[in-house]
Length: 113
Length: 109
View 1: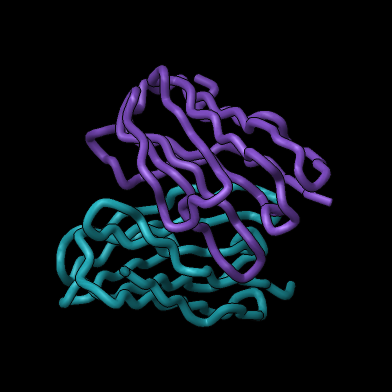
View 2: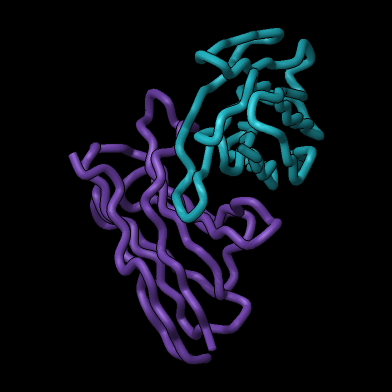
């Protein structure tokens, strides 16, 4: 199993551009989440999903959209990138039986100029 | 909302010394977890504590969950250079996990 796969690993955007960060998992986990990690701020939850077709907001959802059309995929969309969105983004999944145990992807390092 | 405070923010130790990081929640938790993130890597799950007063050990690592389920600690005995990284606690409240800001451990050989 590949686990949680995130693409791309690195991305540079200009202010105002849009892009989608991809996340896929092959563990058949029901729960998936997106976090951002900034220096000294720990991991902050952006959006999460408890199953296909169901998503909800986390602590810092503004400027981001998500959808969950399949169990495997949970893309994160930046509609109009801003420098404040420069961060490392981690996708995580967890099974229903242990919904709080997060299995993280390798991350996407995003810079917005 | 739920807040999870973690101290210290940084810790530098000589190899062989012990290390402890502490986690405190503003609310009672259903469970708490600990993760380790190596430099340049992603967080990796270490352990989950569920019961009040629970103590678990993994080799040189000892994890404790407070009696009131509002605090936790991670203690590493005789640190090694392989212990370098940032250690995060994460508290489970009503539905979401809230991460502490982490303790960055440096080990001087």
